[in-house]
Length: 127
Image (cartoon, rainbow, N blue to C red; front, side):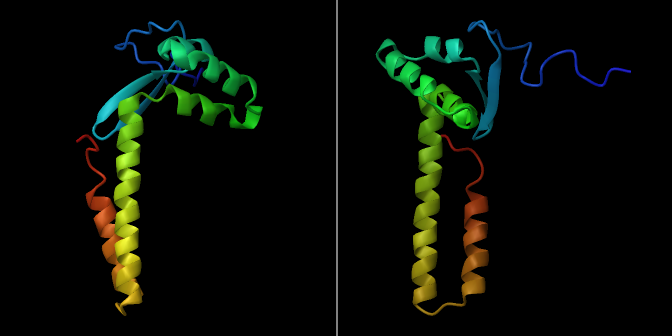
């Protein structure tokens, strides 16, 4: 009995693979985002002026960090912007929570409120 799937886990037959390699898939907000998952595919998807910088980064990345480096370069600009918006929002919420604790509010109450506020924003990250 063969327990391995016929297709790789990250393969989506409904998405044409124009990069000549496998794909990364992730969710941004409430939408699936597909990115190239080979060095050649990522390089081809980048603007020409970034390709040399990408090649240098890949060639100097330790093997243990290769996956993270590839994902960082493969992310489309809208994904980077969505992540930055989420980071900024969470940072603001954390700063507000710190101020509430400093002003004497119960830290457990503030912590629960912070978690709730973070979870409320876990929906779509598009503008």
